[in-house]
Image 1 (cartoon, helix red, strand yellow):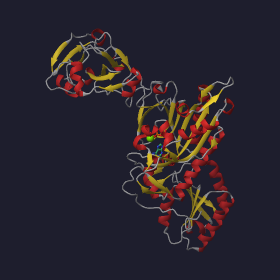
Image 2 (cartoon, protein in one colour):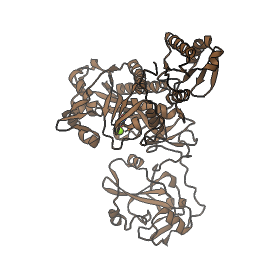
Image 3 (cartoon, helix red, strand yellow):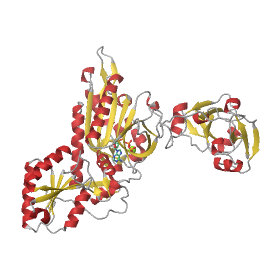
Image 4 (tube, helix red, strand yellow):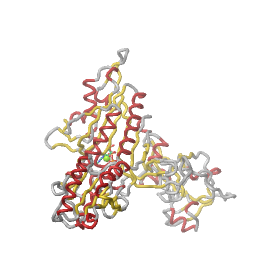
Length: 564
Ligand code: ATP
Ligand code: MG
């Protein structure tokens, strides 16, 4: 493609609202333009990348037996009411004013409707149905460019099986296809399992990319590959290092001391000698939760440990429940169920609230004084904690979710009556799975992972073009003729080439644009080298340069592209 003909409006600066690298560089490289908050136009260079990603996705979805659909984005609201999802999505669901329609944020309902109408027998199963289609979500604060759009492309697929065994297979097929898709895109990714408790034994898994721009926080182990969202991440926990001798319990007057830091400071002790108390209401009954020092309660873990309904007690409930306000609550002489984080197991000589305002109790020996206490893993893991699998040091990183695979079970098939008859003529709900990938997110994450101060560095696996042919001064007849000939030869040899044939643009601007657009190989045709019948190859990633004989260029490029 000739740069003089193709519309790639590169810019030196990015608009002020672009703060993350992928957003800045997609704007600067002329890949996208904003229309409104969270709504982007894809220009030819950007759309070229979207198409390449879609091609890879289609290849791998087809390979697991996926059949491509195209479902309507405009849906009657009625069907979304049948599954209670108008309420579940709330403000995120775009509703068409004065009409009973919604703009679909996902397509479980529509797929299930088709299954309900047409799947009759076990012989019709299993099925994998997918599409690559525009989704609409009224994301509250769309930022991060195309990573969180209000209109975005998703590959969504749905598996239909007769039982959970079948679902497990379809789910595994998807997990494997996702690994192939992200690897084929040259992405460094990791997988995290989400908590499966609430889904009744079924599972879900997210595919993540490490990035400062991410909105999720994950713990990862570089040694063994363990990775988990911090909401569920585990680390090895050692028992509390007990003092040799346990003190007697003693009450301490602690006027106006509310926080753990104030308490430690006041008593001149370490915060690790303090146990923090929090009160939660579990299925209507209060539970006292103890944490070490300043550790916060990980409420996801608390819910998983207790099951049922859990909420923090309101401040105005505390006095009635414990006899004290927050800051003076503790486990000694408490008639509440007491649970503690694992880090407090066997702790002694601890200080905690006395259930009397302005008083604390010291010398608490968890083994001696808290007989009914139960221990659970309730803390957030920290950077440097030991991996639960291999003991190596964990890193805490920000991450972006690229894809999500999810065992739905029969929620939608039951709500919409999607059933099949088995061999004996008995009716069963179809067992479903749902699987999503954000297409624009893949492109943005590629840039998050591959860029420098000059611009994008497309990885070898996927790039809008493989070669950027650059005539330094197109007014020079010899350069122009050489470039035209090379352009022709490259195309003859099936090389994807972007040809900077612009005449009235300085060499400096051409070089900057080439680095900004980030195509892996630059072929630079300039006067000095050409006088010696040579041209230069520059590798965008390393910045390395190589001078080659003109006659050897195509051969060299073939080798390089093969190696790339
Ligand atoms: P997130 O937690 O980031 O909001 P989600 O859990 O809502 O994601 P899913 O409903 O599982 O996402 O959608 C499947 C995939 O679609 C996600 O993994 C992500 O790649 C993509 N996606 C979701 N929301 C957006 C969005 N607003 N803009 C761009 N891509 C999105
Ligand atoms: Mg979301």
